[in-house]
Every structure is written in C-alpha cells, then in structure tokens.
Image (cartoon, rainbow, N blue to C red):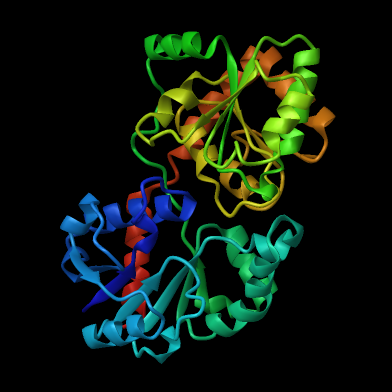
Amino acid sequence: MNIGIVTNSLDREHLTGPGVYLYYMLDSLLELPEARPHIHLIHYKPFERSLYRRAREVIVPRLPGLTEVALSRKRFDVLHYNSPPILRPFFSLSSKKVLTLHGIGRLIVPHAFSRWARIEAKYLWPVLFKAIDKIITVSEFTRQAAIRYLGIPPDRVCAIHSGVGEQFQPQSEQAIATLRARVGGPYLLHVSNYAPKKNSAVLIKAFAILKQMKYPHRLVIIGGRWQASPIPALVSDLHLDGEVTFAGYVRNTELPIWYSGAEAFVTLSLHESFCFPVVEAMACGCPVIAPNRTAFPEIVGDAGLLLDEPESPDKVAMKLATVLDDKALADQLREKGLKRASRFSWRENARKTWQVYQSLL
C-alpha cells in the first residue's frame, strides 16, 4: 500500500493553521507502526524538516500537469491533499483522493475574503470536490457546513478533530513572573495572523474601553502581517501605542509561556473551523473568551466564555472585565479548560486518518 501526502505547506519557516495541522498529524501518523512503512511525503523542492527523514520523500515538479505525470508514475493507492488542488489536473490520477478541508469561511462570511477566494469557493470547489473520494474536516461544524454549502454527500465527508501539541501545558510561576515583568505587567493575549475575518478592530476598540475603565493590563498580539494591516493605525488613533505589543511570530516551543502568563486569551474571529489558539490556551490553563458561533461552541464547550455579540466593543469589554474581576470564575475556566483540551489528541487524529485511508482500499 502506497500513501502519498502532499506536504508543500510544511516547506516554510513559520507554519500557519493548515501547516500546523499537517505537521502534527504526520508526526503522530509516522508513530503508528502499521502506517509508517507506507507513507510518502510529496513536495516540490528539498526542505530541511525532520519529518522528511522519517518517511519516504518524493520531490515532484511544481508545474500543473507535470506534477500529475510524476505522481502517476509512483502509482499511489491514496493521495492526501491539505488544500483544494486548484488549477491542477489531479482528477486524471487513478489514486483514491483525500482532502483535508480546513474551512469554508469564504462561503459563510464572504465579505472577509478576497474576490478570487470567493470565486474559487463558489465556482471551482464544487467541481473539484466531485473528484475527491473522501473529505476530512477538522470539526463537525465544518462537516455540516460542507454538506450544506457545497452539497457534498454526508457519507463522503467525515469530521476528525485536530489535536494540541504536548508542549502546551501550564508553565512555572517563576517563568510566568519573568515574562510579565518583561511585558510590563499583566496582559491579555491574542494569537493569529492578521486577516479581515479576525474582527481585530473590535478587539482593539474593546481594549480601549478597558483602559478607560482603568484596567492596568496590556494587550499582546502574537502573529504575522499585523504591521502591514490597518490595526497599528487604529491603535495610534485610540492612543494605545504604549499599551499594545505586536510580538510578531513566536515559535511553538515558546508559545506555552505566553498563554500561561496571560490573564485571558481572546479571539473575536467571525469564522473558525477549529482554532488552534483557543485549544492551546486552554491546555496552558488560560481563560478563553471567544464568539458563540461557527466551530467555537463545539471546541470550547463550557470551558470558556462565549460571546453572542463579538461585533460589539462594549459587550466584549464587559466580558473581559468579568474575567478580570472574578478570580473564582477565572480559576474555574482554567480548570475546565485543562480538562477540555485533553480531549484533543493528535494520536487519535492520526489513528482516524489512517482508518480513512484503509476504508478507500
């Protein structure tokens, strides 16, 4: 049995959501004795990543058509894509095809995506997905959305939750104290790359309201693309330059201390299919505040505070103040979050993914 997994999203220094998913899924899949001998990792150029030394590495041309010719010669039984293979004649391949669908936000909140992204989803995805034998979604919410918005038959799409890395766990009080001293005091945390769907302007406006209420906290934003976004200008307009820290990219090995030291983690995203940061925050014992929509209720459950009106800066500020003022509530959320996060296992994700491959043979 030959399983080919397309891994080009791993070939960059900083991994975003789909890359994080692929890395940890593969890391656990290659730990399964029954799976490891059959796994081939397919990408377009050499890249230094330890996973490539643990499996059979396959490098193919990047040009559409030439890629498929090279893949056809390998005679893979199953090919697994980590994103829709737009502009590629993959349907010409005889292999069974699996796609991990990380979300369809461009159909649910189209105003938060580019025109090309909307065109892809509306006109190309339905055609492409007819050639996919099995679609994996990272949440039940996304599975139901794929059935509803894309007309995918229910038996061709299955939900397999992502996991959380083992490094995400509460850190020592000494390490937390050191970090808080470096930040300049207590802080709230947001982790994401900038995108319109993140609803970031509301987060900044809500934080401004907290500062007007004399809370001493700072806001730390971790992730990329923020400096080139409209958000720094809004921070300046609201006179928050000394109160908001754009920390840029932070390695996964360093993120646990940032989660552990925060008074609360907050995201106001208009659409998420899973949202790694909320699970990572819970795993580190950080209280979570998130919208009561898309996948958040499924992932957070009762282990965080869910917002019915994430577009309202006043409502968001009041919810944040509730956590900051009520120590008993914050402690309860920390305890519940730790239990909730333990449900999300990469080992279980890999085991179920392997079962999907086997079901197609």
